[in-house]
Image (cartoon, rainbow, N blue to C red; front, side, top):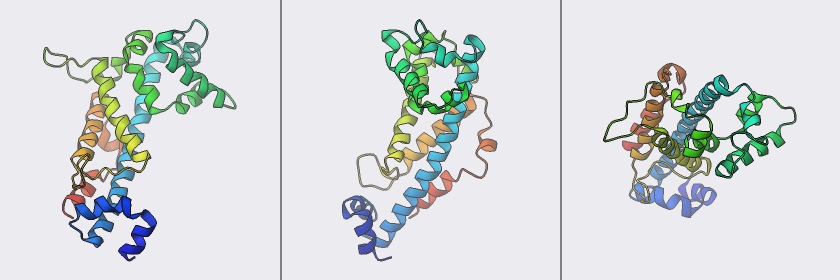
Length: 226
């Protein structure tokens, strides 16, 4: 396809940063655009696998302590999230419950998004669930004077993944130096490595889990060498 036809579909405004990043080479700009889509697809798949693993590990941990219907119970009158400090969490559960035609705890777990599970490590939600959720990461490092590997640390790490997940979902590129039309895969690689680290802290064999799905480093290398 000619670049003019390609840009008329994608829009010149969107393609401009790819063209700048490729020094005005229109064929490389189209290739970079396609490579960014590949990278986004691959990374979104890996994030999705992590999201499923995370929510299931949280659910298993809290179920052991509070029972199988802990989520619906938590949003009920007098439940652990029935307080002003956890109002949005309760509202999220209630909204998810209203979307279910037939209730089951497992359907409710699946209905709640990444942001919800991230907020399980926010201080109020962490306290409400009995301060047990760091058990989800049994192999995380021990805290030191320099770094506290506590729930807030985990919350902030998950916030980074939530941010890039949303960026991909809104079709924003991840192959540039943030804020600049400069080809750079550091942003994508850092978030990918963070996911691998969190999998390891969860004692999950990430290589086996992602077998056949993960070509992120290969695509990053192809972008770097473009």
